[in-house]
Image (cartoon, rainbow, N blue to C red):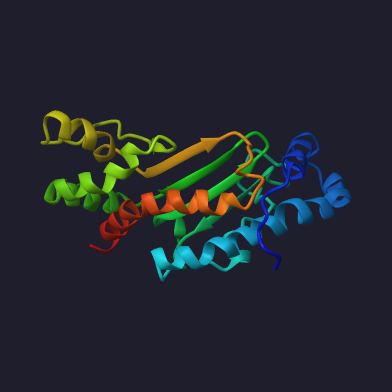
Length: 228
């Protein structure tokens, strides 16, 4: 596997063209472009990120062909029958049966932006109940966990909130910091950037690792909620 040198603008062009021509015939004609400009760079990036992510979590899965998404969509249960994803994503998570129920570091590259961060997208209600109990028991520790996220301007919490808020006993500035997390049905800290020199260069590796290190305490706190 070659060293990661950055994505090419041709990758975004491929996604743009695929958005307009999402058919099996078109993809068959342009499969070599997908391999060259999307699949191979994505796997090289996964390989470059792997050793550091293993330091953050020795149990995390870093095998490139399992980290990098397939381009083929499962259309069996979707109203959208287009056969291919006009994007590529990398998801670093532990090797579990339902990884959407556990925290994962991620990157997604698409036509007009790239998206990065860490989240747990489909946690069982029991996990989020334990998450709130840990906050109740260890509020100062949780504030220390989220402080790097709150101070970093490149990412922010995005989550679906419960329709009926849970009682939250904190007050003042502590309440303002904790309450958005306390009322979340899932947790995702996400950053968005338009295509830039970072995306097109090896600097993307260090850029992502810097953000993943910021998110590591929250990643650990979420795992603690799962294993409690």
